[in-house]
Length: 374
Ligand SMILES: [Zn+2]
Ligand SMILES: [Zn+2]
Image (cartoon, rainbow, N blue to C red; front, side, top):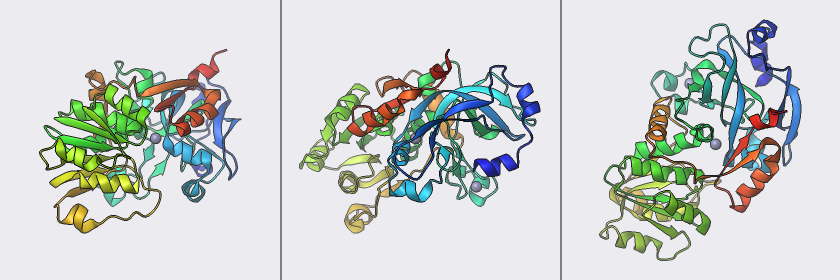
């Protein structure tokens, strides 16, 4: 929470003096100001930062399904979000100022950031599982996010970018990390892979799976436009989720056995059911899509008798996934350009959400820095 955060913060006047000379006292931020639909772009104070934190000037920010839930003010958002709050968790930018004890970063560094801020001291954090820390605070959800000219991040969460990573790719390292974590956890080398749900993360999983050595990749979605994109980024074959013969079609292509691996990216109950039905006995299913409610699956038929290994996937490994994602982008084998369908000025955020809900966009990136040019 920004208020609690500020209480622990050293007065920032002196810090500001050593910061980027372009820094002002106030900034624009996309805020959820009241418990209702929509966002407002408000002028607010540039946030203070603690000794182990950095202030980052945001340049590009990715718009995510999570932001759309908060925009729409659905049931999940009503339970989780406490306005007023700055939204947004996918970004890249440059370090504008560093707290007194920050050692690994300097003003001007080009960075992205892990938006899940783990507690660092619980059992999970201390045993290499910080991505599932029970006390996690997520930027743009539990504390102020990146749809703003500046964001405060703990030094440990900041990822210094390789110069070879383009800005717009760096802005979506968070969802790319979800795709990489899912593919790597499932293990796809020399295997047949079905992906149910090719929204932006499902689409990203296609070139990642290819680069990780998948023998074949089948993409499944209910939207034909998404399937076209899936073909463009490397799926061998694409299938409409509404096709009543879908499972048979997949079985036909896999000797009647089914695919080795399912990557579930849709969160739809029927897609999960059919996805599990198309995995071979002894296969693996990695589940990333989040069902909005309890779903009904015949566990005996779909998992137990088949001897499936089912993995729940949450966030990104800190920071193994980040090294993998950057290495894959640098290799040139994971090209996100066809997936980032729109780069919009910061003030066109309403359009970003329209494009996403109509299905016209895959990934939308907001150009936050461009907003400052005057
Ligand atoms: Zn996201
Ligand atoms: Zn923890």
